[in-house]
Image 1 (tube, rainbow, N blue to C red):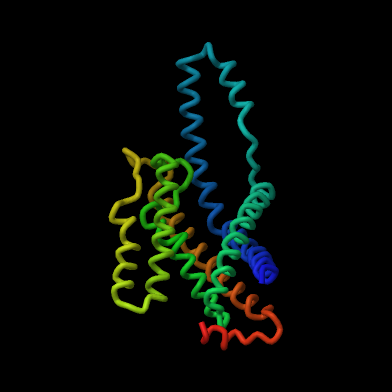
Image 2 (image 1 turned 60 degrees about the vertical axis):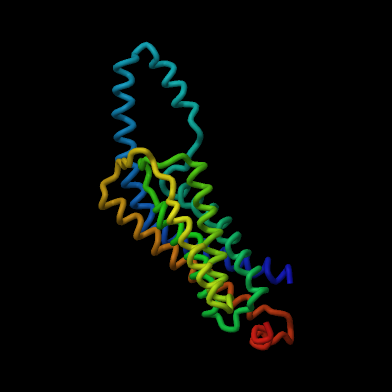
Length: 246
C-alpha cells in the first residue's frame, strides 16, 4: 500500500507540476514581471534619495548590495526554479490525496476530481478569501500572523468539509458550517495601512489568474491521482466493492 501511494504521488505530482509551471509561465509570471517593474522603480527612487542624503555611506551601501542573496534570472533559470518548487508542492499534495483515498477509494476517476476540488477549497479558495494572492511590492501584515491564520483556516476548512460530506446528522453539518466560517468571522491579519505599488487593475488580474490556475491544477491533480490509484491497485481488488463496504 505504501508503494502504491508513493508511486501514485510521484507520477501525479510530476505531471501536475509540469502543468502548473506551464500555466504559471503563461499567465502568472508575466503579471509578476510587470509588478516587479514598479517595485524596481520604487526601490531605485528610494536608493537615489538615500544616496543624496547619505553620500558618505555610498561605499557601505555598495558592499551591502553586492552581498545580496542569489536570485534566478528571468528566463530558463526562473522557470526551472519555479518547476522545482512546484514539483515539491505537487508531490506533497498528491501524497495527501492518496492517503485520503485509503479512507474512501475513488470508484471513478472523476471522484478524484472531487477530492481535488476539496483540496482547492481547503488550501486556496478559503485562505484567499482573507489573504488574497499578492503581487511584489504589496504591503502585508506580519508574516508569522499570516501563516498562523492560513494554517488555521486550512485546517478548519478541511475538517468542516469532512463533516459536511461524511456527517450523518444535521448537527454535524451545522457545526461544519460554523467551523468553516469561524476564521473569516475572526478575520485575517491585515497591515495597518494598505498599500501596493502595482495598479489595482493588475492586482485584480493577478488574483483571478492565480485562483483559476490553482483550480485547474487541483482538478488535474485529483483526476490523475484518482485514475492512477484505481488503475494500479492490488490485483483482484474491486474498488467499487471496497468503496461500497466502507
